[in-house]
Picture 1 (cartoon, rainbow, N blue to C red):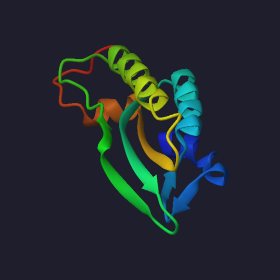
Picture 2 (picture 1 turned 90 degrees about the horizontal axis):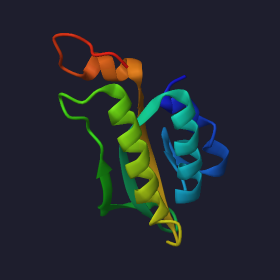
Picture 3 (picture 1 turned 90 degrees about the vertical axis):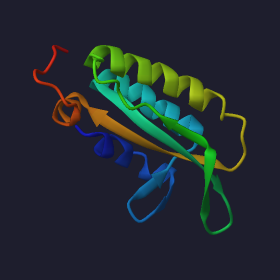
Length: 121
């Protein structure tokens, strides 16, 4: 399963435009719980204000969890899940906030990480 496939399960609970699925922080935390069981990591979170007919990006609600070059998958996965939980938990009381999650799998990580050898999981 890919991250997009997992998030697609939440489409009916979300605000969506085109291919973008905007989740409430509460639903995003549910996704985070699921990815920990699916061996996925969080690449980034982007926050938005939900307005009448559109969404407005919030530059103060961007979290980038790009991996370090020397980071092993398990350490990266676990640290991004923990950081994402902390980030989203701070938004639970916010009104009219939605987020987009960018997730990735171990296989996607192996393809994108520049290495001479692929480290063990």
